[in-house]
Structure formats: structure tokens, C-alpha cells
Amino acid sequence: MYKIVVPGDFLSEDVRRAGEGTYVENGKVYAMRYGILDDKDEIRVVPLSGKYIPRRGDVLIGRVEDITFPYWVFDIASPYKGLLHVSEFPAKVEYGTMDKFLRVDDLAIVKVVNVDPTMRVELALKEEFRPPLHGGRLVEVPHTKIPRIIGRNGSMIKLLKEEGRCFIFVAKNGRIWIRGNERNVDVVAEVIMKIAEEAHTPGLTDRVTQYLQVKGGRSVRNKAY
Amino acid sequence: MSEIKLIREDGRRLDGRLPEELRPIKIEVGVLKRADGSCYFELGRNKVVAAVYGPRELHPRHAQDARRAAVRFRYNMAPFSVEERRRPGPDRRSVEISKVSREALEPVIIAEYYPRAAIDIFVEILESDAGTRTAGINAASVALADAGIPMKGLVSAVAVGKVDGQIVLDLMSEEDQYGEMDMPVAMVTRTNTITLLQMDGRVTMEEFDRALDLAIAGCRRIYELQRKALIEKYSESRAEEGGV
Image (tube, rainbow over all chains, first blue to last red; front, top):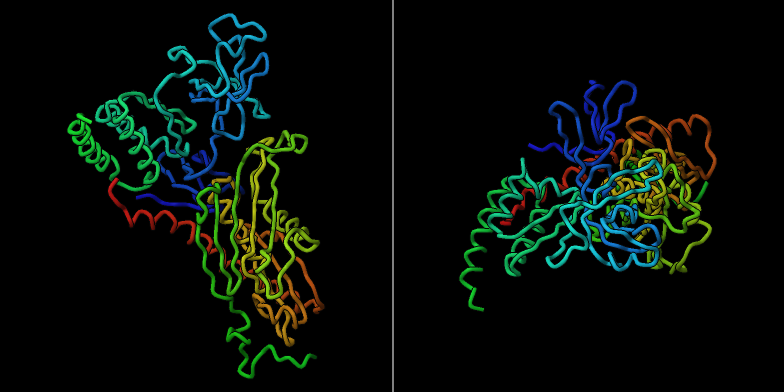
């Protein structure tokens, strides 16, 4: 069962196992965050809340917020902005023509290539997805719920994709892009919000399966209208 | 000294409490939907709500610190929080309380994790009955944890004082007004670090020591309640499981 810990809770004397969400003081491991204790090999505290902080390698969905040559400034659902340099764009981009390629409010799937100590975030584009993203729907959930939406070994997201009959892209910063038939997108978006709300409850996968089957049946029946 | 009796014949206080007794406490976590973290805190007749936003982008930019997040704290009393209407807006007293409260919480916040950002704490006093700054610190500490801010521990706070020659815990309004001494204390219970200590009045060194011990004991009790409230937030919603 889950064990909830609070900042300052004593966790262990084994300093070598101290992991994320913990800190060491006088040879003891304490919780640094309010969250769920994961005490398998490493002692970690998985936070229940908090803002997304970019890390190298993360794949995100960003929204262009500003254009200042030679960077597109992305809102990445974080206290920090992401910068995409024109040289990362797979075309020759001249000064003054940046908005021909990506405009303010456009969405793009980006990858964090570097974060410096002052939290300057450099981005690159993911080759598989030509920016900007067209069509589909963007859903935002707290980034702490993303692991639950993916599920153990991707079980939940697999279920959503198959039963929901949509293309779903889940990004680390809590943004989820869904593309497909309008009605299916409605169902998937609704289910995702539910998962985020009930992320800490057990037996979620079973309930999602059930729900998707009921909803799936209804959407077929209602096809006429 | 005064004609007003604050301690009854039977040794109890005006509201029937023993000298080392706290007022009833109620803590609710996550009461505000739009804040990143929040807490409603009741200490007797004090009603306080704390909201935490952040880490978020800090404006103006010249206030940014490239090494850590700036912690900002705003203590504010509602106009209706006291018997006589309080003129809205910051005054000398609330500016001071905001400063000392921020300094009471800063030692536990690991601000180095969020360079250039801001962590904003708002404490609103809805109803006041002495001891609002300690109630505000207690609420803010829980709200910070709820917001997922990395911290070394929770901060707990309580006031002690001297009333009718006796050292008592957690003064209420009458005791604060007509008592001989008032001393709010905030501490990190895990490390026994005192992060706020103010005093108003006159006591002997022995009385001070006794008062401080009493405050520390009070903080420990409040800490247990703060911790319990945070843990309950998630066990509760687990109980009322609905269909997806």
C-alpha cells in the first residue's frame, strides 16, 4: 500500500540508497517532499504535486510564446521558458522570416537538449513530428500524474490508444495531444482527466477499461447523429 | 496588577483551558483549487487561509536571483477580521509580520532548486483572536508542502505568554491584551531550530525559559496535527472512490 510522507520525515539510515525527493543530514535520510514513498532499491519520494522542472532528454509539448531572433521562446508549462534556436529548424530560416515557420501560439513537440545552472532551457525539435502540430486536441494535467497515465510499462496508455481509437502523445510536462475522431477524442480526454484526478487510487486500470468499453459502445450506437 | 482576572479560582483560564492547553485546531489541506498549494487553519477563533503559488516566473526581472528562488510572503488581515473594521491594505504591523513570517519559513525551503523563480505565499486572516501570525505560519508551512515545494521539514508555531503571573500557552485575545507578556515562537520541530521568536512584555530569565519550553512542546503538538492533515488528504479521497 502507499505510504504518504511529509517533508522532514525520517526514512532510513542507509545513506547510499537516498534517491530523488530525499535529503541526507547527519547520516540519515529524510523526505524532502510531500509525496508517496518508494522504498524498493533506492529510497525515493514521488511528489504528489509541484511544477514541471525541465531536464535534459525530456520530450515536451511547447507553445510558442514569443519570437526573438534567433530563438523561438516556448511556454513549456513550467516556471522556465524553453528556447529553440533557428538552427534547430530543418529549413533555412532567415532573419525576419521566423513566423513563416512557427508562429506565436503554435504547438510543437520538442526535446530538452540542455538546461544550464540558471535554468536556461535549450530545445530541439523531434524529427518525427513536423511542427507546428495540426488538428487534434491538447489536454493539460499536472505533470506529476503523467506516470499514472502511461501506467506500468505503458499499460494504461496502450489501453487508451486501443480502446479509445485515437493517436495520443503524452509529454513529460503534463501536456497530452490527442488526435482522432471527434467523439473518440472526447472520451479519451474525459478519461485522461479522470485518471489525473484519481491518480492515487488503486484499481484504476480496471475502472478505465470498464468505462472505455461502456463509452465505446455508446459512441458506435450514436453514430447516426 | 490589573483588576481584570484572567485566571479563574480553579486555575483554569477564561475559556476553561489549563495553562498548558492549546485551543482547538482544525486543519484542511488543498482548500483552494487554483493555488498550487493551500491550507485552511483554525486555532480557536482564529480563521486563516494560506495559498502558495510557484515556483513561478519572477517579475520584475531585476529581482531574480540566478542561484535561488525568491520567497515572498504576504500577511493580510481582512477588514472584518477584528471587531472594529480594519482599514484594508498593508500597514506597519502587517509588513513586519510578513517579513518575520517569511524568515521563519525560509530556512526550510530549498530555494536553490528553482533559480530565478519566485515562491509566493499569501496568508489571509479571516477572523482574528490573537496569535494570527503563528496560525499564518502553520498554515503556510502546510500549504508549501501541499504545493510540492522541496523542504527540510515543516515549521510549526505557537505563542506563549504570561498572564496573571502565570506562564500560559497559546494566548487568546483577552490574555494578549491584558496579560504581562506575549511571545510567538516558530520552530522546525525535526531539528529543534527556532526560526521566529518575538517578545513583548517583561519576564524573568527563569520565566522565559519556562515559556520557551512550553512553546516548544506546543509546536510539537501542532506539528503532529499538520502532518496528520497532509497524510489524510490522500487517504480520504481514496476512501470515497467513485467510478472513473
